[in-house]
Amino acid sequence: MGFILLGLSVGSMLGILASGPGVARFGARPIMLIGTASVTVSLPVIGFGAAWSSTALVVAALFLFGFGMGGGEIAMNVEGADIEREMGRPVLPALHGFFSLGTALGATAGIVFTLAEVPIQGHLSAVGVIGVVLLAAAAGKIPAGTGLVVVSTPVAVVAAPRTRRAVWKEQKLVLIAAIVLAMALAEGTAGDWLPLIMVDGHGFDAALGSAVYAGFAIAMTIGRFVGGRFVVRFGRPLVLRVSIALGALGMLLVAVVDNPLVAAFSVVLWGLGASLGFPLALSAAGESGPDSARRVSFAATIGYVAFLVGPPAIGFLGEHFALRTALIAPLLLVVAAVFLTPATAGTRAASMPQTKAETRH
Image 1 (cartoon, rainbow, N blue to C red):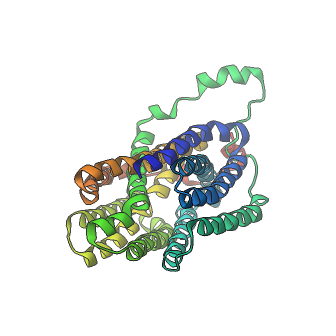
Image 2: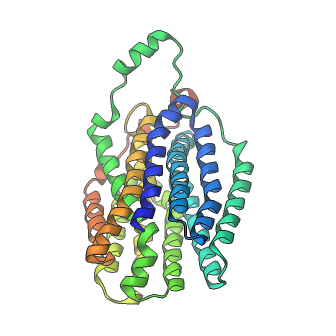
Image 3: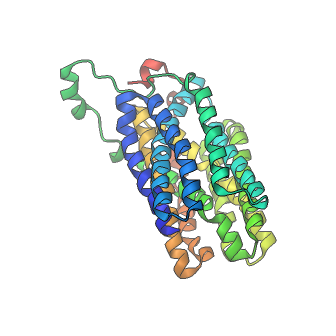
C-alpha cells in the first residue's frame, strides 16, 4: 500500500507544483477542468488495474488521479477564496463541505458495493461516468480569469520580480500554512488509513470499518456546512482553536483507548474537529496581505503536500509500530496547531469584499 500510495503522491506533487504557475498563466478555470477530467478518466483504469492485479497499472492510474486532484484542488481553492471575498462572508467551509459530502456518498456507496460484491472495475467505472456528467454540467458556469496574472508591457515583466515579495518570507502566512499542514495531515490520515485502523486496531470487519469512515466523512460534512455561522458569531481564531482541539481529542482517543465503541465515537470528534481547519486557514491566508491568489495557492500547496506525503509516511510507521501508535505523529502536529491560531485573525479591511480588478491581478 505504501508503494501504491507513492504513485498517488508523486502525481499529486507534480500537479501541485504545476497548479500555481498554471493558474497565474491561464486562470483557475482551465486548471480546474483539466484536473477534474484527469480524475474521472483515471477511475475506471484504477478499477481494471485492481481487478487484473496489475500493480503497475494501478500506480500509473493513481499518478494520473493525483496529478488531476493536486492541480485541480488548488485552482478550486483560489476560485473559492475569490467567491468568499466577493460575498463578504465565510463560505469556504461550505464549499469544502461539498467535498466532504461527496466523500460521505462515496464511502456509503463503497459499503453497499462491498456488501453486494460488485466488482471494483464496475464500481469505479460507474463513479467515473457520474463524474463526467457532473463536470459537463458545471464547466460552462465557472467564470474565467480568476487568479490570472496579466502582464501588459515588457517593462512590467522586468519589474514584477522586484516588486512582488516572496510570500513564503512572511511570518504570519507561514504560521497559517503550518495550520493548514497539520489539519490536512489530520484529514488525510483519516482518508487513507481510518478504515484499516478500525479493522486492524479495533477489531471491526471490513464493512463496519468503511461505515466508521463514512461517519467521519458525515461529521466533516456537518462541521463544514454549519461552521460558517459560528465563525460569524465568535470569530475565526476562537472557532479554529476549539475545532482543532476537538480533532486532537478524537485522534488521541482512537490511538490510546482500546474500546471499539469509544473509537467509533471518537472518530466523530475527529471529523468535526478536522472539518474547519483547512478552509478557515485558507481564508486567513487570502486575507493576510495583497495578492491573495498567490497566498491561497501557497497555503493550499503546503496543505496538499501534507495530504499526499503524510499518509504514506504514516503507513511506513504503522508497519513498524502499528497504525494506532503511528497516529501519535500527526496528533502532535495538530496539538501544535492549536497554539498558532492567533495568526488567523484578520482585519476588517482584509475581510471586505473586493472587486474583480483587485482579485485577478
